[in-house]
Length: 310
Ligand SMILES: Nc1nc(=O)c2c([nH]1)NC[C@@H]1CN(c3ccc(C(=O)N[C@@H](CCC(=O)O)C(=O)O)cc3)CN21
Ligand SMILES: CC(C)C(=O)C(=O)O
Ligand SMILES: [Mg+2]
Image 1: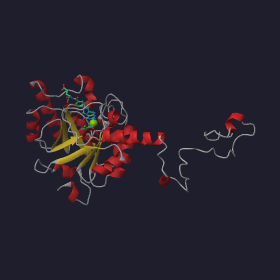
Image 2: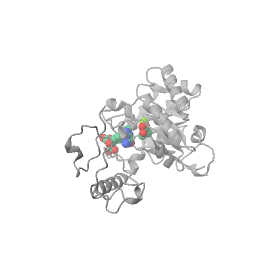
Image 3: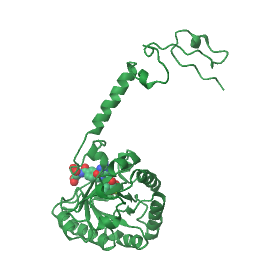
Image 4: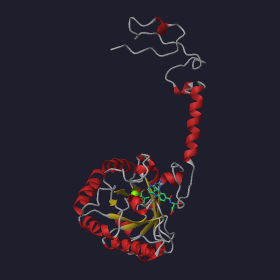
């Protein structure tokens, strides 16, 4: 069933049951207004740790904290009533032990009200995924290009080009699915490996820079809207250029303020005399200190009255 024809929130169970015949539509959101825009159209909204790069201007996702993810998870939950909301576990919050992973995932679930968490990793994280799933925390897997492993990958590089790596990614996806993940994000992975994983895996595969044969697709919303200009991976399709539209609007505002065209009378409280905007009369100086310098009370001064000194 598509997102638009539901009246209850889409669950991780609903996502698990989806096939390529009825693709999972997923995008990222970090804020309430973006979540509100996505909610009628998306099955799954991911509060991605990509927010470190897109919102905070970091070079990678490694500097993102649990508190940042929780704050943005709460904001997204306020804007989404139908989509299944998943929050990324940030770097360092789950790798150390399954107990620490549980404690931090539980904080995310309890403090945001989201439906599930996502964590990056394959065979080495399978035990942790099983530990969380057995204790009531649905997990979305993430294999292939793992942005939190950017330094091990040697950059944001497409994965699975050689046979050994291809086999490792296949084993990673299988281990995470076997551990009980309700779906697996497969990022930056070559055809035909990605296609084979999507075909064979028990859990649905949500692709990003992977295969059109996946059971779902996810992208970063700012990338498809033209709101993030630092890089554009090959797998991104730009559906709008809102960055350019915003730059035009900002330039128009700046022009109008400098030309005394904004604010116009309709933006003001009370009657504004005609042409008053161009020639500013000084306010009667009622708050100036008694011994204000002569200069500041000069009749032609257009500057606001100085605040009384304390
Ligand atoms: N805005 C945004 N969009 C994303 O998709 C995204 C993030 N941020 N941050 C976290 C990761 C980083 N991602 C990236 C970033 C860059 C490339 C990239 O430039 N890839 C090259 C291929 C390089 C190669 O294989 O040699 C490309 O041309 O697509 C890929 C994924 C995906 N994720
Ligand atoms: C790109 C998606 C899958 C992600 O992990 C993120 O936005 O952080
Ligand atoms: Mg992420």
